[in-house]
Length: 314
Image 1 (cartoon, rainbow, N blue to C red):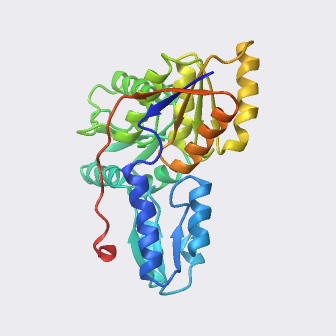
Image 2 (image 1 turned 90 degrees about the vertical axis):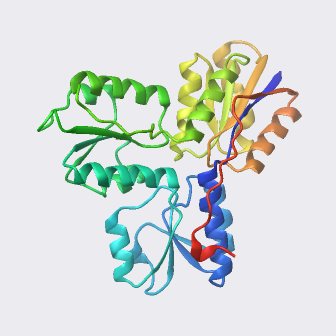
């Protein structure tokens, strides 16, 4: 069984930025900070930070007065910020700058009187944060079918935005349907799907030219990791999400059952919130089971880095 690695894979700049903020805050504030929601959607990352002293909560009301709160990479609504300030919390914002861009677009479009159609998953923490910027003007659109059934008050004053971690292909289909329904619809000046999401999806498509099976290392709650599985399946490949190396043998058995024969070539990638050590352990397990590391499929080089908030810079 030949093993091919997708590149880029794993942590993106936004995830590295958010994790470093929590680590620096723990150093700066004597090993105790509160984090609103999981800093990124990966249980292994969250567990490591908990051991360092981070306390994860869902709402500011769970935090004692005058403590430090870090907002997760997914962003928060104005309501959350207001609750934090009411409790006198010291705020540190780890929102990914690319998510912040979508928030800023929502504020601008709402201020100009647009009805905003937010393409994303209802209930996802990123979507909740963006929607909270203008709840009376933002409606979430999850599917092409939902886009086809939409009615708006003024078809000449409609705009769309997207969750940053969606499938590029699925988003394009929904946007196409919205443009068909509302020809005057306004979109963002630059695609909201983040560069890391696009890069990892493009890499999986290229990977699929070489393999029959794709394993994606990531957390079940990670939208971008789940979309990588969708992309591979869209290329008619057997694909599974796994959280750690202990799940490798089970996934391989399922893959061989679906193929009806032994696997000849398998691809390995990871979502943007999956740490390198998890990916390495999965690769080591594949090799231990008889796999041969064949090649790395490189489709992009990522050199983006986000500067830390002023309060945490040395």
